Length: 120
Image 1 (cartoon, helix red, strand yellow):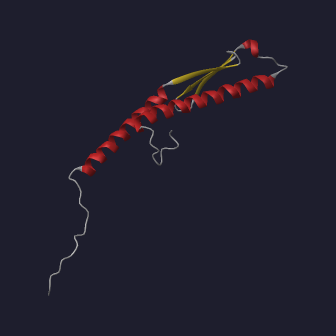
Image 2 (cartoon, rainbow, N blue to C red; image 1 turned 60 degrees about the vertical axis):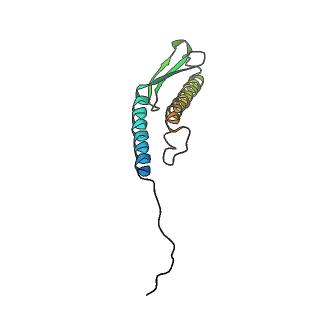
């Protein structure tokens, strides 16, 4: 049996490189959970119609309250009131989503991490 010169096969890894990256990912995951929990405690207040409608929403896009100025309630123009409510709620949702994206984006450094698209 002859021994020839062969190529070395395999992958060389720096010791601890994988473990360090795994720790960083775990730390990022923990920070994201904490940030998500904190978003549920944060609220945003949005007004529409010059203050006629006020919507308070959390960082989890849960509407906490809607306040309507009694002066804007006109039984002859319910459609205008409905439009104001829709505009205020939509603006509140957008602001809440931006808050979540800002908070979570600060953790990931703007990386597009698969599976987090719905969170950011």
